[in-house]
Image 1 (spheres, rainbow, N blue to C red):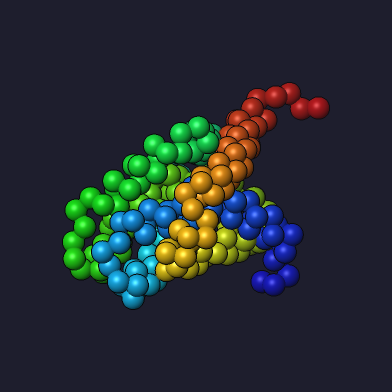
Image 2: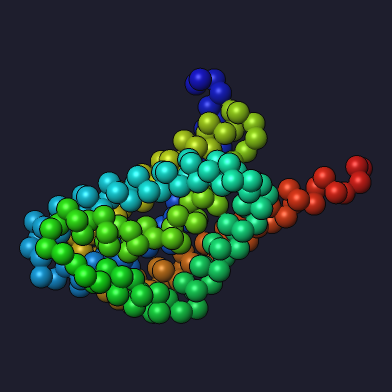
Length: 227
């Protein structure tokens, strides 16, 4: 098993997934909203919420990375079609983040505030994990990344190792960013969060474009005459 592991593929996959998931999840920007939404809670309650949200976010991202593409393939969606559609969704989401981030922040704040019950265990998953932290956009990005898996077995092992580690890293960032939301607000501020958000949104736009190109290549390659 270890001989089939490709560290280079794992590193490349880790960097790709980390930049993509960080852009769409935006732990720092979300922490600013989290601080506002949970302003009535104590620091201990926020820390407890952050632990639960980080755990749930990891489960959602890992499930989408590992099982998203096979489930769609079960319903007859080809890998090429999945890459094209997923890439377009990722690119469209990135374009929205890049051009009108304020509208997305307002929507996420409304989602997080909608009907919060008193039980912390209940609000940790819904709405603070889904859809606030890891919503449909994050799931679409994770599925698109998972659909980009290589065909060769050694590379595939490294691919999934790198992708999984990136998802876990994002979940850890969410846990500590949310747990330290007060400090994040003071240290970075809204302007700094928007600057970082737009920087990573551009990277996410490039990732979505590349995934779409890979899908189009998969469709056109069999139709082209052999060289």
